[in-house]
Image 1 (tube, one colour):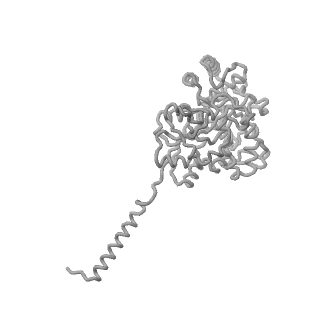
Image 2 (cartoon, rainbow, N blue to C red):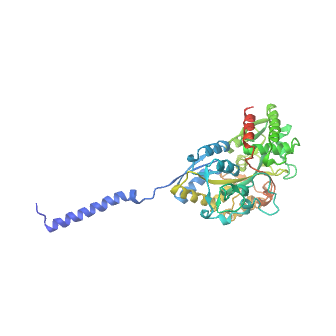
Image 3 (cartoon, helix red, strand yellow):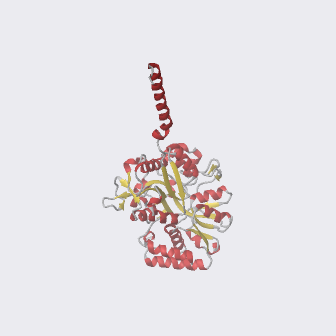
Length: 422
């Protein structure tokens, strides 16, 4: 069959069109950037759905949040670093994760807001006159030293990116316990008062609950510690001997493992006083339960949030992990988390995204000039209220002890589970 010039031009044009059509059909699959999935393991404190949705929109990544109770979280992360890409918890987890080889060093040069991070993390003090407190202040375990250990000497690699932090104490329901005075009458000893017997709970986290108990025993005059952040075997034995006796007498109503459970303990009147985290107090107030977050005269138990990279995180996922970590210090997350009583390491970037009333109440310790809402959208602070314990600076100037993994941690862990099972 012979082809005329006209027919040949027609077939050539048709072929080009088909090729273009085929390319157009394939283009989305050829050129579209694959969305990275980032698995974030942490607690209910920061792994909140509003933050997940916002981060996904702004970063263009897919986030999978896996919130757990603190003890289970640490155990899983240390045993199986392949199960997460980013880890969010508290600084007392760092030594365990580092020694287990579960996390990798973070390059300071890749942290966009590193220079804005305040001195609390880098030196252990917001101000020069602040009380540092016993145990692992964050600066002691922040920097990766030349020998591969963690220490306070500044280097270009860190074990975690600093972000949220707070001072913790106990919450008490003023329907059952008369309101005390901050730093004067409020005391950790209240956790062991006989008048509260049967209505007391502790947090079920061995590196946290042990210090709440120790501060209560010391407040009651039942024990003293040479160094609360590094208890001896004899001190641990005595502490748990007293706690076991108290438990067998029915003093403790329970041991909570998550913030929602601590709220439920208060809501159902199972407890009148207990170890608490700020979001739990905020949630209780939002539900009309008059819980006061104590400012103990003995000082607070402090903690610092950590964001870590799994030892298994590489390539595009690692790039996404750095984007997510930097996003946390970009302003919005710090403003959001302030509404449940938490601080951020570079608050100056979050201040413009908070109302004047919010900033003055949460950071400056002033009276609330209007009703303030928590992260759940419910009113958690009523106009006229003052944050118990005062300003950011004042609260972090009164740290008794930091959440810490002590050298005798393994021994204390056995004792802790003996207490739970008694």
